[in-house]
Length: 303
Image (cartoon, rainbow, N blue to C red; front, side, top):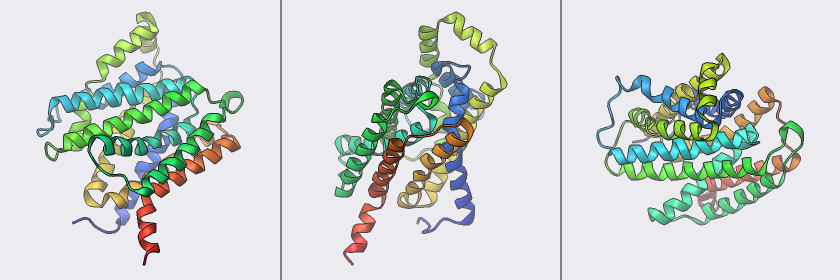
């Protein structure tokens, strides 16, 4: 039976994950200063998988097709598009907001493929968040903080790929319970080759070799942060919370991720969202709150 309230220790773990995932976007920006998007993404999965293959057994109840599908969709789709979007002009703070719309895309996909009915408040939250996305997309900003349309659309595409990877994990779970750490380690093997191939195709062999030879401490720190903290530690702690508490208790905590993302981008990168982007961000967060708490609010109002 799930515990009703988070203990102090689990509150600390939840806050740690929120900080790690929120500042994750700043680490991406630092890594992209010297590495191309596809190469940075490939090295992230190299660090998250290869050092652990000798010590972590493949999850027994999950078929290889699910591991491969999840790895390619998440690695090439989600992070490949996200890194490319950040490289092409998506501010880190805005990326942390837009990427969270994966929750609503997941809702739509689950309703269509898994026959999981969406409630009225889910649709209302979706509409409010879409209005916020339109406001963010229409506000480009100025100077170094300017957001390009390409960067915005690639980040939206990344959110859609995240939603597809969520759907794959739902299908994988039907085979039986599995160890999340083993799942993420072994699924991280599959995007390495496609990402390296894309890096060679887009940048050329000479450029890729030159980037690897000239890799600096900032890039190494970014890779390790993305692989060990954002992926393995963050995912492991979050899954532990979901195993101990109800999804309704844990899931709303993710609403703090874009808040940390915006603040960290302002403090560490000097980003300054425009008033229209702030308005759009508030609308996206409001939509998420409606999606998470709408049922609870209606139940309270009927008493």
